Image (cartoon, rainbow, N blue to C red; front, top):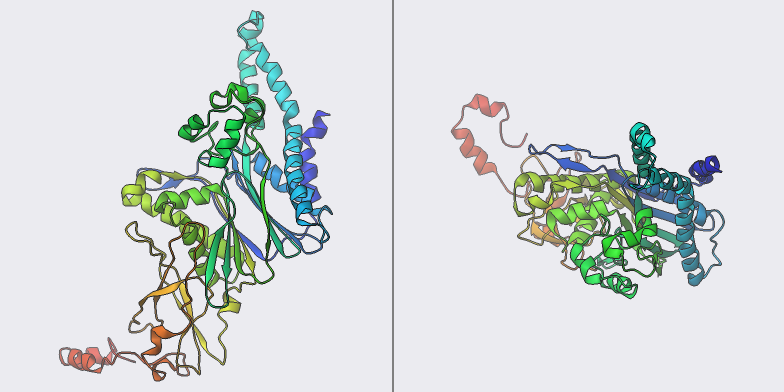
Amino acid sequence: MAAQRKNLMQSHQSWTDDLPLCQMCGVGTAPNCVYGPDGKGTQSHTNEDGHLGFRGEDGCFLYGVFNGYDGSRVASFASQCLTAELLLGQLNSSHTDNDVRRILTQAFDVVEKSYFKTIDDALAEKAHLSNYLLPHNENVSFHHSQSQKVQERLKELEQEVSGGATAVVALILNNKLYIANVGTNRALLCKSSSDGQNQVLQIGRPHSTDNEDELQRLAALGVDSARVKQAGQIAGQSSTRRLGDYRVKFNYNDIDLLSAAKTRPIISEPEIHGSQPLDSVTGFLLLLSEGLINALESAHGAEQANQEIVAMVAAELAQQTSLEAAAQSVVERVKRLHHDVYVSGRQRATYCSRHEDMTLLIRTLNYPLAEGALTPTQGGRIYPVSIPYSNSQSTSKTSVTLSLVMPSQSGTLTNGTNTASTLEEEGTPTPGSQSPTATLQSTNTQTQSSSSSSGDGSLFRQRGSQAAQPDETGRVPPYVDFSQFYHLWGSDHSDSQSAQGGLGPQ
């Protein structure tokens, strides 16, 4: 029996091997990092996050991001088992919203119970060996000759059974979106409308020690919610709902904050939101791990974290030709921002001495990548504009990368993407670089924001249609006449230098 249970995870791994991966999603990851005094980072443990992205039958899609802790066992098991519980014929297009919610809730329950079955033999052995080390045990010869080996084995068993995970799962069925959340990960839905307006929606709230609904739930079980809120953590984690973690599931009475609970206070039951119709939605869905959220909020504060991450994603989608590359680029940006704040020594540097594993999943919804979004018409050329992403603590403005399309027959430049932003300031082209620049400004809302499109070409309208006409090489004439400058500069320099083409048009 023990061998069969130990092989249960291997059997789960093979269940989903034949399921096709979804090609409409991309995942970016980065391992945890602890910075030293010199600013260099080191990884303190192996990556404990997990994710999934599969396409099932009957128009069903499943995505998930899992934030593991104290090991990757639970996150890995949950990503495999949950897929098997949802995409092997359990869901079909005839199911109602209530059916889907019921199936999702049951799947999470099965995942947790199945996981505990894989470790119950290890838990039994751990309890058996622990009995030998109790003070009342009078087997003195055992203590002298075997206690060290028993303690080493107990450490191995503790590592094997410890750990848990939080999860955010997105299910698309009949072109309707359902979000199932357990813990402190996050789901964001960005919707773009035809008139250039965007909405950023955070779906659900994290199950954490500052969630008033969760505190009320704990209080109803006899837990002192005020103490929980003040502590900010329960057994080392801020989440009030988790998968796995046998310590808070079976031994909660031994934990000071939970000792008065009448029943199990830390649960695995998901909070389900949906359905959200996607028939006319153009935009993207984001699933973020707690580590990614915390890294960005540590660096820049929590006020605009949603808007910042959406701005980064929109900027990368405008430049990248694959979702995997876009997601990875966004994660790298957050990692760089976090590191830069730490080495800057500014006020928030103290919050950025380390970050946990980071995972971002992007699922597009009728949203074109760079190849589709920036394909010019009538022979026009693409002029990418690279603006480093930045955010100052003294301003709420967010700068991102923008790409513009230069039509060959039109005198106006249009925004080649469908991002939710407004042009903040007029860019000035520099000699030798014919790419105009612009800065995007995000709106300042917590869970929902919108702003107008910059696609009307007003930024360059005053320069006239003649200036925007590219020649056969794709160049456009300069907006400013530098002839007098070149003449004056040349009069102060030798003719030989001028002949070498140091300045001026070639």
